[in-house]
Amino acid sequence: MAGCAFCGAALTPAEMVAPSCRYCGKVLAPYADAQAKVMQVQALMGGIPMGVPPPPPYGAAPPYGSPYGSPYGAPPPYGAPPMNVPPMAGGPVGGPSPFPYGGPNAVGNMIAQTQRRIRNIVLISTIVPLVLTFLILGIVFAGVFAR
Image (cartoon, rainbow, N blue to C red):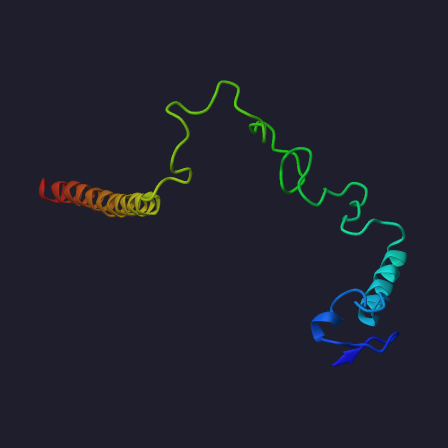
């Protein structure tokens, strides 16, 4: 068991965590050391309050967004709808969507649409050249055998 450096009282580990001795009321050494370190940090910070981030350099974006509403500090591109502005005539007809990101089948629908597009591209890119080839061969053979 450790004791108080001032009155010599035996203190339990739980009592050593307290800021002061319960017998004499003096500040215990670990708490005093921590308080001295806080004072040193405050002196180094030069009067900036603890817990407040320093201001950004001139011309830099604020740390948590900007007055434009963009989290990256840049204004929105020309023609983009304003950010963080309530709608002028209310929300969507029928109320807000219960699935704001496309619902439970969104990924399956995207996969099916991609497969359809790939299938159509493959069919068109194979059938059109085949038809043109047979057409040209037909014209050539018709010209050869027509003599």
